[in-house]
Image (cartoon, rainbow, N blue to C red):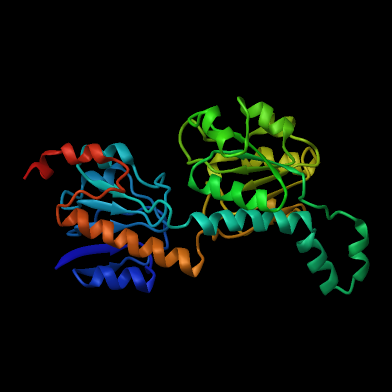
Length: 324
């Protein structure tokens, strides 16, 4: 039997797949950083909410594969993993619809002023409806930063609501964007200026860290909404707080944060023009089952020595350990 550690309990469907061929160690992580001691002797590791750095990777020579039930892998030191011949498995497409629906739901909640009116009605304030903050999404411009799988699905749903979609993605050609029926925008600044709602769908990389900061928020429309269901570090949260307090933009809807879990006294939580959820966009029962199952299948396949298609760093297969 193989040995696979998981940072937190995996969905039962994925767990069942793992248990057919391996013994599963639930680390039940409460602290973010994984240590070599915790994964000693493990062939595989599945990370839900935790990080693994160069120190732990280099001190874990038995580790062959790290799985992520999702598409983000910024919690893994990729250079160290590749150098050690450790494959990193992700599950593209498994959470696409769930995250896109969550982003659109956040747009709808903000557009209809639902959270404020919910809170006020519970206090007996029926007249909260008369502040006329709600608006229609029809004919509004949705600006997408990134047109990967989730961006495409978000665009499809938004079009169904009558919105027009503009896209900024430096790695997707104008021809492809326009063939899908969307407006190609050459620069981020132009997208920010033109959009009523901005929705972020890019990974957290060095090039995207604090992609939206004070300057970018100044460029946005004062009545605009910023939606982030991607990664927290893409938005400068201090700059966002200032922009919301100063009403530089109308609001923000955040499923992700630069620190997770965020502190209970986070300043953003004090603002009425912010909607927050606990990194749950991909946590529907359907998506969680798909992600856990596909991640488990990929982790086991790598341990068995197979070439798995959904590996972030396929160059790690060139490591001497796989030549055997």
